[in-house]
Length: 300
Image (cartoon, rainbow, N blue to C red; front, side, top):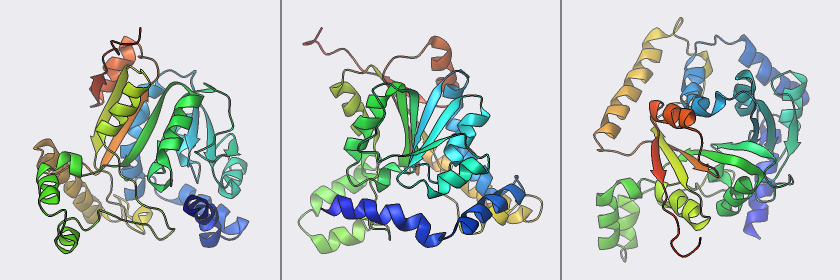
């Protein structure tokens, strides 16, 4: 089956690029030695800051899914919460644990998580969902093992936010040649073999409604300005390039606010239980849009 081949390819990707324990350890060493005020860290903080409204309660236990290097769990641990880092392959995570990056790790397939129901307060899946060959199986598994909710950070499907593109698709649906020029990345794949599964607000609303959940929250961000070597671009040594990237982001944010273009990334929170008023207020202050789902009138 194709999905098995996809998982096998992902399982070996990191070992193909970092074949030895030494090469893996060196990655963490370079990360520690790099100037922390660098472009790569700044871009990652755009992602991680979205978690802050849910990290204020220091007693929560988190699960990170597809956390290859352990950096997602590291951010959560720094907030004072517990975090278990998981990935298909834990060769990297085992070294991360030895290096003190994370406190614990586990090998897990997102489609079949081995933990009992509601083992964790929150589950985080950051930039991994689009790699899954059967992502809906993964989202239901993450919801199963979560008590409070799950957070998915992924590229946003542009069609739901670009009516013109949908109109052109409907108009030229039967003409593959024209459609391939209008919508070039309609079917996009990564070198490792996976289809790039982009997400939309509507699909997560439907998942929540189908399960009888009451609240979903969304935040749109533009963090995708990374390039190879970004970790060496510091405000101190490359101020102009650093500031240029910031200006690009500010301009993109401006266009998104005007609804001229869609945001690069959608942060989605599916709550299993409606959080307290303090958390609701924190989410709104952080820029989340909250969608309350009405009760199903046919099921009491």
